[in-house]
Length: 198
Image (cartoon, rainbow, N blue to C red; front, side):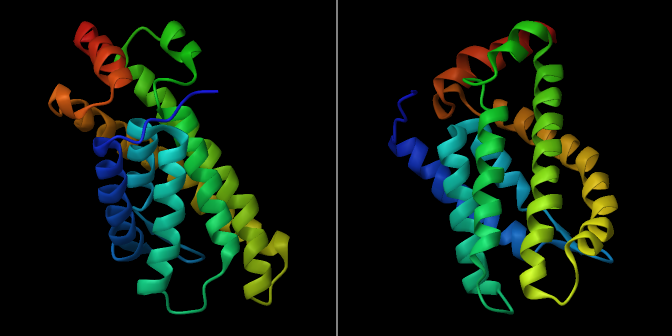
């Protein structure tokens, strides 16, 4: 099992990303027919990239709870927090360079590796949103599971390429931070690989 180091930098990133998740997840939204698309996934993916699964779960879970308490129009529903925690784990498990080392070995370009990681993360997150959130919604609205799932499916699938591009660009931007502000695995791994691919 990997040891998690809760350094000052780690906790600072977590706090800033929770705040960003609350803002981007609740204030920056695009209304669609069956759901709302927001940009709260970006801080979760960034946390996954920088902090790993535990950090991304903290950002996703706290962002969901605090965002609902601060901006929510209805009662808090814990099912959506469960979804957020699972999605946070998946982003951390796929985006952080300490995990899925086979991607680093099989993909030579740092940018391509980030894009593949982002695509796999976005696809897995979409699957969780499609199946699990449709189930939670059956408790809140008077519609059947399959009706909700089929209505939401096209929108969740359409989000995958958008999420992939946005996550990739965000992680590339994070790699441009000063080396002292980056975790060791990013500073020595993905960043060096990207320098070689330029």
